[in-house]
Each structure stands twice: as C-alpha cells, then as structure tokens.
Image 1: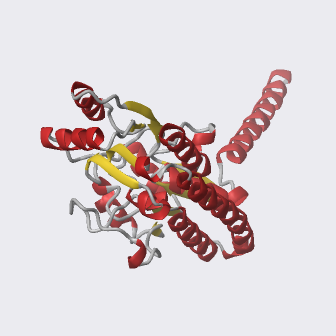
Image 2: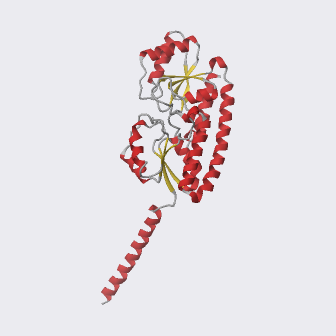
Image 3: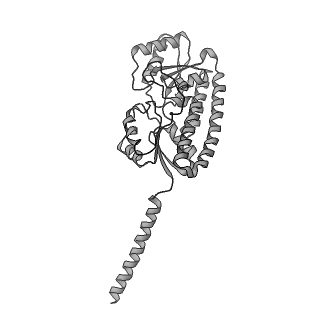
Length: 310
C-alpha cells in the first residue's frame, strides 16, 4: 500500500515537472506577439528594423557580401518566407531568380516591392539596356526615404494598432537620412571636378552619380550576371590613362579579378592606378558593424571615395 501511495505521489510530481517544462517551452518558443517580416537584401531589412522597432521581428535573407543578382533561395529561405507575416523585396528585377517565388507569395500575404512608390521620373534606365530600370535605387538617399515611407505605410496598414509607433520611428529615421543626403552632397562636391570619376567593378552607382554629381563608370553592366570582355577592359583602361584617373574601387559583393586586369593594363601603359578602397554596393557590411547599417554603409562609401579622389 505504501508503495502504491509513493508511486502515485512520484507520478504526480513528475507530471508537474513535465507540465512546468512544457509551459516554459511554450513561452520561449511561442508567438512573441511581434510581426514577422522577412526582407531580401540587408538595406531593406535595415528599414524594417528602424521603422518596426520593438513591434517587429525582422529577418533578412541575404547576408553581407551576397550578390542579389545571382542569389538563389534555399529551402531555409523558402521556409522563412512562408513563416513571415509580411515580405519586403526591392523589385525592379534585382532579385531576378526569386521573381516566381514573390508572385506565389503575393496570393498568401502582403509581399511588397519597396520601390513601388518611387516615381518613374526618379528611376533610371541603364545604358546597357539590360534592365528596364536600374534596381540600385538606394544609392540616391532620397529614393531610400521614399522606400522608408512605403515600408511605414504597409506596416501601419497591416498592424494599425502600432501605426503611431511606426510613424514616429520612421520620422526619426528619415531625419537621419536627410542628414546623410546633405553630408554626401557636401563631401562629393569637395572632390576636384576633373578627378570626380567613380570607377567600379559593375555599374551599381548610377543613382549615386546622378544625385551627387560624380561621373560613374562600371566595368560590368547593371547586373553582375553579365561578364566583362577584353574590349570592356581595354576601353576602361584607356579612359583611366587618358584622363589620369588615379584610383578605382572594388566592391564587397563582386570578385576583384576584372578590375585588377584594368589596373594592370594601365600600368603597362605607364599610368599608376591604385585601388582606392572597397565599396559596398549590393550588400552592406557585417551585422553588428557600422557598415552593417544603411547609414553606415553609405557614409563608408562616401568617405572612401573622397579620401581616394580628393
């Protein structure tokens, strides 16, 4: 009888322990109450983090150094997209290999291109004709202010309970963006006009050139999926030699081999060209660093360009 009583007490205690463990797991792994938002590139995820604040769980698919032009979604990425409440992507064919995925997701949940509210007149058509519009809109900070307003509007519509918080967060972030825009204009203007030429591995800085009055030349076209040929290398080499351009720039998400071939070609013609530094184009810096934010990435690029060309 004592044994039966002891067994019953032990079983009850075990049930309480298991119940406690189960409850703890539910609290840890259950719904946090936050909106789950998945974004493709880091620059968009940065907007979501700034605007969403404590009410949003922001997940970015593409990490530092990843080229969105060539990116293929993994099964893990598909799962993140399926589990998300909302999806933000750049659009304008930047994430070319993911277009069909976005089309399928649109019927299930809000799936928004952050470029959708940028006016036609503010979009640029690339010279190489590879795209209808250049997708690298974030290099004009004014465009990124519009993208921030789009994210804010969509979050506020989806989660009207916290709309005021989103709007206040956006207002504070946009003030910082306006300061960045002003800083960029002032710094680039300090470069002598004859040397105000930005030469990079691929043509990602078209919006930057137009907005901040600097001539931009890329070895490859808008997309890194295109390859530079010997003619491209020789033409760019000759331009550097003839115009005495002293620095070119590599990009964190693009191989250096092609741009190094241009440098070697210029040296063979007696002109010394240096790598002025590494710029962030299609991806931001490592998470947790200053360059791992949009504000820090742009400021890094501006300072690197000015220090090399001024």
